Image (tube, rainbow, N blue to C red; front, side):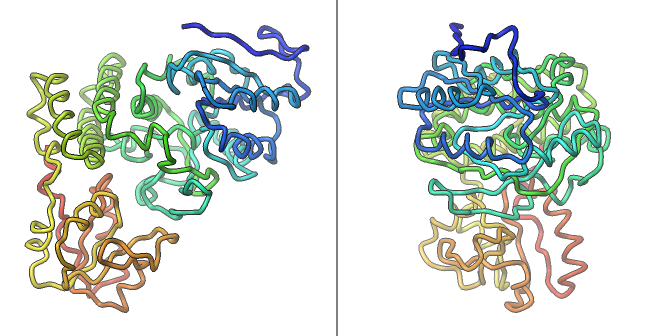
Length: 434
């Protein structure tokens, strides 16, 4: 891999003399993000915590991203700029790790931007708890920075299950350690010595390299701490990003899961954590094929069967793209007046196929404060407290990922808050069996 360094006059790779001690190395892959890059970099420079270096790897940008990086480098020697051919974000991050000088490493994305106290609050908790892995929350914003999701109970932290502000690890969650956090890397502060000791790196994938890497962090870390504060503004599905074209790379999600399986086997975590691995594999398959159109889905099935010729049938239930349809949903509801809990992408795709509004669906419940009152297909999104006003006969869980966790926590919530409303059987229950 060809790699070069863009260096200031007083800077060398072997001996960098900085004006402040480096406590955090921030690693940022950069590829054709000139529209967002200044906002990202400024949000780092304006942090209340300043003892950091910024390692930016330009991944073969064809726009003005590299020029912007060089401009910032001229003004601040804490910037280190690497250049590589277009090998992808995983390779860019791996190269950044090799040069990192900080006690901790944080991977951020160049199209996101950060609250001013992000580094300070992450570092304080990492230091206080001597954590291998420190995790904060985030909110989603659109291309223009408008908030589209906040207060999510499932992304990027499964709030209903993750213990907050205390140390935990895999021993506490043997059957579901991989379902506690979304497999994104940009909300996690990692102790560099922990990375080195466990020889952790990103796999060589075009997309979905985060799946294997983040889940490997989770299984290896002995000291994890999380806190529910939205410190990252995550630009979700921006135009032309790889994430926005994920349906064309669905098989890479499977490859990343297979990397994880090989890692678990090599490191001796199987069979003790086999149930957790099966769960996360099925969740990723189900979630990713929900993005595919019919042609992409057929292509994925062919690739999946070729990739797992002897094992693909054990995942057959997860491979059903249209296992929930408007007809199935109508039959499931029957004559009851219901609300659907969770305005997920998946149930949205189901409801979009309705030929007419189902009069027995009173609306959608979602804890995302940014979506309250907005239309969702033929229905309206309400906050949970609307249950008391609309008085449905029952509520059906219609979120896709981590649904087993959510379902169990909702049972407890309904006993306490809505004793007269039935929480109907999980719509996905039969499909989730291995």
